[in-house]
Length: 158
Image 1 (cartoon, rainbow, N blue to C red):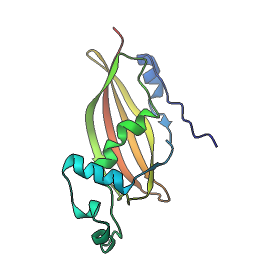
Image 2: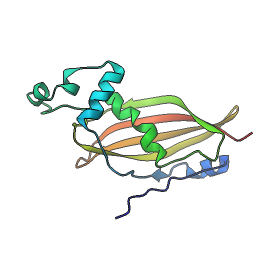
Image 3: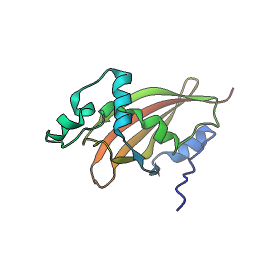
């Protein structure tokens, strides 16, 4: 089965506006391994035992190690880039987040995927501000593990 996703590739402000209200995705599943969690812990100096100590975490109510919430958030650019590409513009910048929630943990060894909805595409000086709602789903669960409203600044070709 081919799981190749062709991202939406808007090249004009009108193209972006036409995507408002549209859900894109899901992406293919992405495994969250202990090695990935350990590398994130090293990169951020967040070595809380619930993330990096499988033996201690196994005895906790969670039953094992879990990914950092911020690791889930950091997957946003990679996963959303599979759904929406801005290569028809001069460049795109991460402008921040309006709201981020982590409603459920991501157990190490589980798989996640993203659905993305284009919420707004508003003109701003020098370009367009795009708001997307990123929902990270956990395989086998009806509850999302992350919901984030991401802001991007898109600069048109000059």
